[in-house]
Length: 135
Image (cartoon, rainbow, N blue to C red; front, side, top):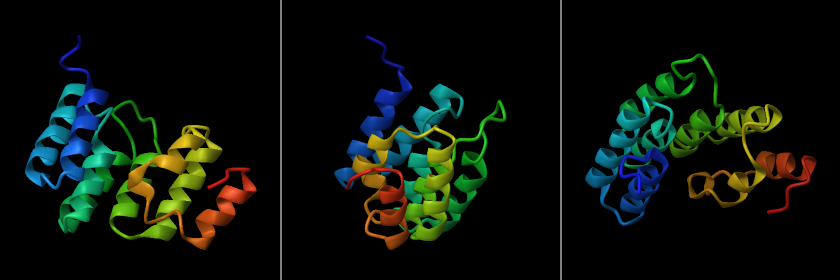
């Protein structure tokens, strides 16, 4: 119904990623960023860059994800890029900040595949327990 709906394209980009179609995933996530003016897709693209070994691209994305054009911060975005880079402590810092700001619903912490490598971390587990989140 809405062929340019950014969240749908972000999910499509993540499907391409899961299928190992990296070039298609990058193109789709870039399309999301373009369609949304950067409101969607930045963190996902940064995570993808990190996971496919394009660390410099991922680190550049960190500059873009910290704050949107309106000056609003979304700590979840850098969290998923840091998770992709294997910077788990920093990812947990970002997730704790996002949760404290109430900008991150708890179900994301449990099911988002971009956080798979962070959930086993003792500090993440302590954070989850402290906030009554069961994983």
